[in-house]
Image 1 (cartoon, rainbow, N blue to C red):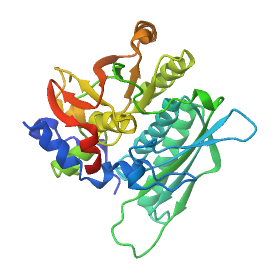
Image 2 (cartoon, rainbow, N blue to C red):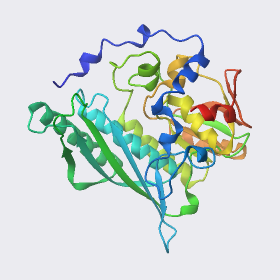
Image 3 (cartoon, rainbow, N blue to C red):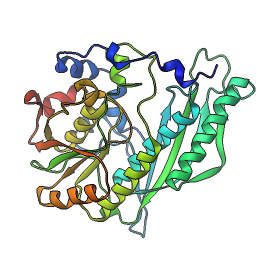
Amino acid sequence: MILSDNDMQGFSIDDVAEPENIEDVIYTLMVNPNLSTINYFNDFSEMAVSPDSLEEGDTDETGLFELESTDHCLLMTTHAFHHHLEDNPQVATEILISRAARKMLCYGAKPLVVSAFLYHINFADHNGHLIASGAKKGLENAAKKFHLKVTDRKIRFDHFKGHGPVPPTIIISMMGMVSNYAHVTTHEFKQKGNNIFLLGRPSDDIGASEYLEFYHGISNSPLPEFNIDTEVHLREVLLRLHELKLISSASPVGKGGLFFTLLRASFPQNLGFDITTDAETRRDAFLFGESMGRIIVDVAPEKEDEFVDVLSSMHIPFFMLGHVTRGEIRIDDLSLGYTDKMSTGI
């Protein structure tokens, strides 16, 4: 049955106890297979990736392909989503496409084309029709907002009988391009002393997060906070920052929230981060919530003034988190050790 948004209104973050020990949360989530760094490698790549190589390369999940006889670089990413696809298929699809577009834009690429695939949908069933119809609306709206072309069949279906209670899932593939391979912006922090900024607004939101489901055991929660117009605004900001070459790295806040996004950015160069959380936001939501519309960037000190001017002129909310360290991880003056000691466990 298709549920209304009101069916999730019974959930409140106030009913979830905020953990006193942040280290306990971090080390509990590190054994969550959905947050393992190896998941951020095994995408479309010509080279096999082993766990031993995780700390030496790019741990991002998007494949990059340099085109022969040209400076152009083609990017491809595939994302899947099942949270509340039955409850609100349009918004769930818009969230998925926005995530993929945000990933592309962090690289400095312009997303160009998207295709979608619905799995475990029985389109002969009325409920399946409602899910497919909502997903189609979400695909069309997001494609229009992000100026994407959609494959001619829009959404393809695949339904398998006898697989038991498998939730409906939507998978999208997106392709984009960077005009010059040398201008690709990767996700890893570049050097000690760079300042770390959060683009977007912190929020008391932990809906549909790995933290809420894995640490608290709560799976019945609303979709993460999301506004597609905010995503479009971020698109324009990122394009401008790349054009002016003001950022050294860019990462969308994704699975595991801000903390795990920072951790993934630290691994490749064995760097770390020293950050201060927002006093007006719940600490667990700030670090582990997965609300949409947020980007982590690091900025060289000599570019910071111009960077801040651009954000202010484009009216984008931002928050200075802290700075890149030589390898230590610190949150609110609490030391959590060094990345080279943590990486083997994640």
